[in-house]
Image (cartoon, one colour):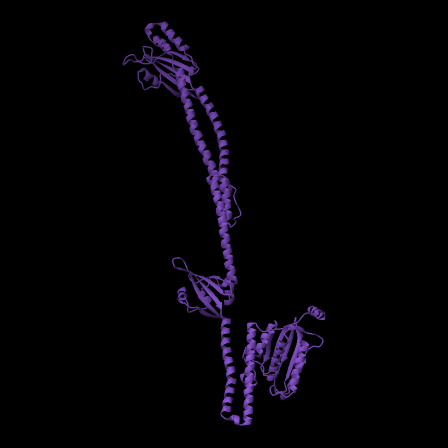
Length: 625
């Protein structure tokens, strides 16, 4: 059913139907007119054939004159009987009284019983009768032609003087069977020709409609594929008519749309790639403040998923209760800062307007300034710490110099003690400046590092041997009288080779050992271990001091940070040793951290990448060569 409905609705069917219907109407109209003309022509020809010659009518007029005798009547009967035609069936001669005076009949059963009204009108001399008319036969089927002629005394069918009435009437009855048979034959031939023409017209109309609709179907298929996003189809319709021009225009349109779509797609992909890889978060909202686009950086900064964020009000998403509408954000001219968890985010708002000036959307740029804030705070703390650390020894030196100038230099004992303090504070400031310069070189990347293959086992034992001798010898700085003991857990059956700068690594171990000795209690033990941890070498230095609070363990590697500031400063520390150690270890792609519990001591651990055995054998082979 759907196929039939689709066929009836198709333009091909409409064109065929209209074309065939038009031909049918033309053929029928022409056929009716043609058959009618043939019938009229045949009837006119029949009238001429059924009209009696003048000499015959004269004999009939003479026979109608009763005074002329039987001879004329015989001549009348003879003339009537001699009037012959292929069409004539009956001939009747009426006198002026309406009586039949002579007749000729091939079919007597068809003779009228009485005079007809048309003949009566003709006998009366009227002009309203029809000379030729057709009528249905009384018996049988078909029609017959009837020719009625007035007879005047002068032997013609027109009076010689005004008011003269006819002396009789001749009525000729003829069969129209041959006339209509001829018309039927012509009609049959016409119908056969019309049927053949109809079949041919249907075929030609189908071919014509297909010629017209086939390009349209191809164009329709192409436009459907264009609408679906497929621009690869190209029609091959040729010609110079309107449909060919339309096909060429569709091809051009397809190419233009394909190019525009590719440009738009590239721009969209480029925009998506830019938004996706931007370090800053980007939020796009509509004019009502509802979020429509959010990039990956923004989802990470805000800690939300893209599906959950889209459609939300940006004020709720950023937790800005003081802003309730887009108008409030428009009034905000400066960048805003928003706290999201432990992060500080700077929000900048940009408006998107149409040519008329109406706001269509807003773009919010989210920039994580947590690290910047931390750097700024560290910078301020660093300046404050440096100022504090330098001010203390400078104040001490200035006060002692002032005392000496006021007369203390006269006492040799006081002079020696004051000079010793000044020397110690000066040395402390010198070490601090040296450490600061070294950290500056590390920050700028100008620190010289000369790496080489070093065996950690031998290096640690060498450094610890030196500290054992320091602890055994009198030393005011290390307070050797506290009987601190160093315990080693360094394997002898396994060698740990690392690619490091020997001097820098020695400085790190010295810093950690010095701190362990300084903060260890009297009679305490320092444990130094070397072991394998996965593909790395792990060095641990454990003391039995007061430990480091959990809140301060991440800060111990900050510059100038001290857990116990008064005690550290009294022991001559600069507060930069652990910061330098961290920079050095990270320079060797290692890691350093502390594990500690209060009143249970601290363990400083660091890992270094050790050289694999196959690489080590290659290095040894090169050394031997």
